[in-house]
Length: 304
Image 1 (tube, rainbow, N blue to C red):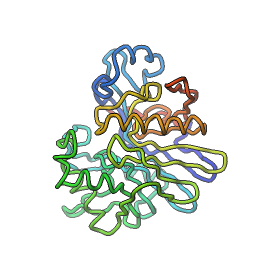
Image 2: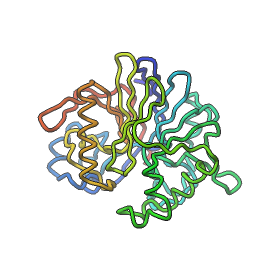
Image 3: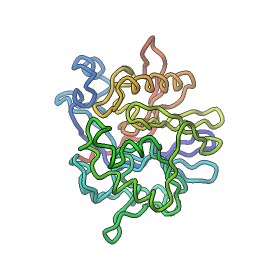
């Protein structure tokens, strides 16, 4: 097994930042019930769920895409040194940049950073702390940030916009504003073609600007879905939202639509936080979906 796959002319590299126990599955996906986890326990455990404790297991990871001569990052993980209300994210001192270097990517090599949405675990390495200032980690990159999320999570608006503004404290100031002030941010709306293989497609609900990245190269298809779903239980139960979804019904609509596109195109679904294989192929199963195959990425090492 490997952490690299090729889709047509696009190379995809998985770079884990952290992996381990997160929160109880019933808290993580509150639309679910205990019977849902137990009914699917034979394949959810041990990579995605602890059967004895009921804790959901997740990965924090970044996807590197090499396409048409450019290096593209899909989301930037948690970052270091940042004040966060979630313990695993708070004032980290992790080795992610070393892991990125082992994958053959230096910060200056990155051409495009895609923030699928503005949450702390997706924008963290947008910046790093240098001489007590937050500076862009990737000095030559264009950062693609959904305009709707830029406005929604702006400090002047987040308290009245978000269901849980305390969870999002500081992230705009330390991870979004610095790249915008440096002139490296492009605030996008609607569908955006990155190149001939890659296209951003809106999938609102989790946040107003949530976006997925479609990869279509030759006969191969994949879709990087960010937080459209957090646990694979949401692949087979697409009506179930995570606890972090801002607009519940819109999140369900987007999830059904994106999973439908993936099923119709035999596309690998690649969520941001999936442990184990990192992605899955789905098929329609009535109003729901079933998992027909897992990606061949190697399992990430548990670190909690």
